[in-house]
Length: 137
Image 1 (cartoon, rainbow, N blue to C red):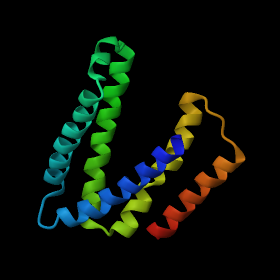
Image 2 (tube, one colour):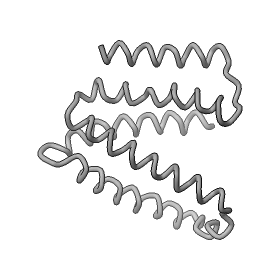
Image 3 (cartoon, rainbow, N blue to C red):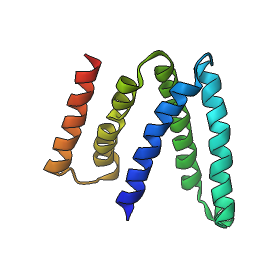
């Protein structure tokens, strides 16, 4: 079932690039990011509230809070740079290069989470990196 969520994530991530590029005509990328963030905030809290998950906030540990906050900071910085890249670059080049995050996440998961790097995963990451370099050059 996880792969269905992953495919939906990829689909909506692709829509982000197209819709953002269309919506940023004549708009500063930082302002566009701020507007998008407010919408995401409302959607995320709406889902959490509607599913009755808000009560779980009381059970979060200090470690949960630290890493969730750091993840939020990383997300915010990712969006700021992504939207700026979309503003000045072509979606067909920016979006695939942004997906270098997949190869980076694989490497970081091995380094920090102790996940196993299989030959299949290593080849996939290498292909992503190679494809990104083709687009950059």
